[in-house]
Length: 181
Figure 1 (cartoon, one colour):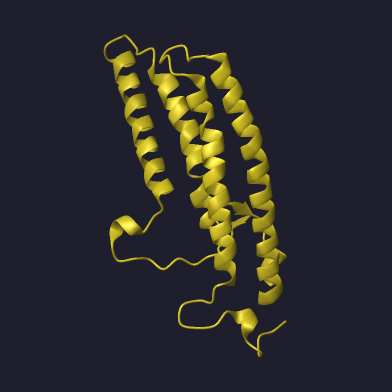
Figure 2 (figure 1 turned 135 degrees about the vertical axis):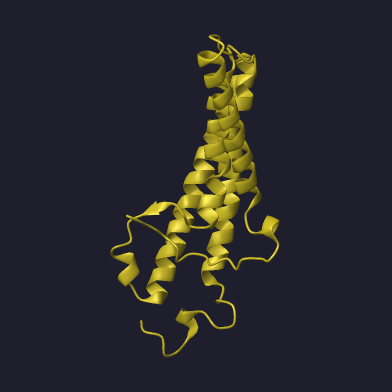
């Protein structure tokens, strides 16, 4: 198994804050919160002999949001796990059509799950259920699913367009007459 890197090649901007998507920065912040909260929990438990009642729950909810929120960045940069033993041996034109088909399937599945995720969030809102330690409304936690899939759907469309863009300084290989088909 390898990481698929044929879909999009992003040129690296010179300004450090433009090198990554907003999803990656939010994901990094959520990861930082998780690390700090779990570290404080370990210190409180083993040094002071007492623990926080809310730390595990906060870390869990940050992890859920981290996974769904960064899904868009994974789709855009084609960093999802793929098996490309056959695809890597295909001609450039066929490979691009294959990648386009993958993006269509990703988009369709994201939209389908997005619709059912919205239904789930509305139901959770109607129930009025809250978490046990943080007393956070559970619909806020479940909103990670539709938000993440909406971002992933948008990023799938961006990746789909990028498949057909010519590389910087040249034409796309499938447009060249000499290209092997």
